[in-house]
Length: 146
Picture 1 (cartoon, one colour):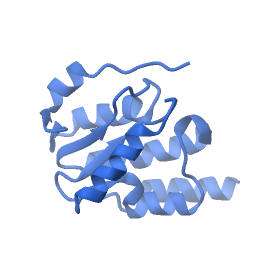
Picture 2 (tube, one colour; picture 1 turned 45 degrees about the vertical axis):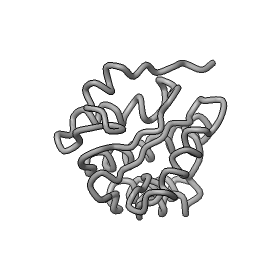
Picture 3 (cartoon, rainbow, N blue to C red; picture 1 turned 90 degrees about the vertical axis):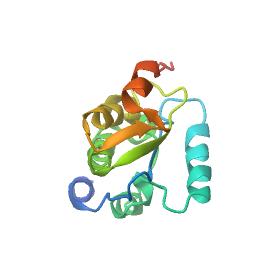
Picture 4 (tube, rainbow, N blue to C red; picture 1 turned 180 degrees about the vertical axis):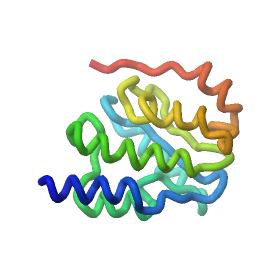
């Protein structure tokens, strides 16, 4: 398991997470009672040729290839850390608009604990779902699922 984790960290830190401007897609399903946000994100991607999630990048594909896909609340702390590194890099590389499927996101999710802050700090990201990112953040209210 230690070799797998070491390989996962190397992938998360080094494999490509690049997307075209205005094509990054994020979703939140961790701790939530269903996968509607991910399903909606996949539908959006199927309808928008350039759109892609972290899962679709070489980094995401390599991590999934190691068997490390799953919800934050299901995969364990170490794997969650790996995905948060990859996610942070993905957001830092993004430009323009972020397409976010995060309705009802839990405050413990990767979107709430990592991605939203990274979006706010990235000067190359201007909007979330076509809304000024500052306005989106002010109006975004995470949940807490027991």
